[in-house]
Image (tube, rainbow, N blue to C red; front, side):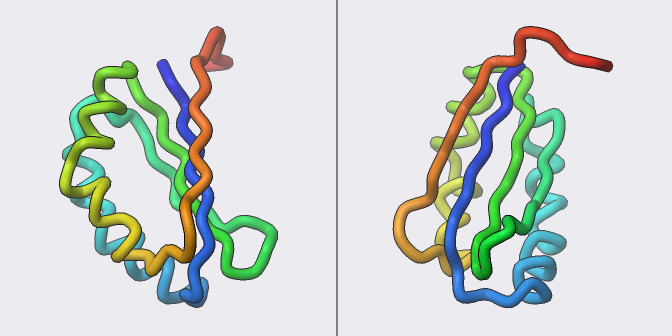
Length: 94
């Protein structure tokens, strides 16, 4: 299992970000191997992100090559390059 954290800057308001996240949720629910996705607001103004829980690296890589992934920058009006961090889960509470 992998955890992927994506952070980015945008000029969107919290309300606008939440609306886009809600609109995109059904598409993410259909992504093979994506066990969970959290749309998050960071502590800094204009900073948001996503926390993804993947069943495998192959599933994550397939998503990253998809049209859905390619549309993220435009959908959230991302400014600059997103920060992406990927971690392998060694043990889980549940």
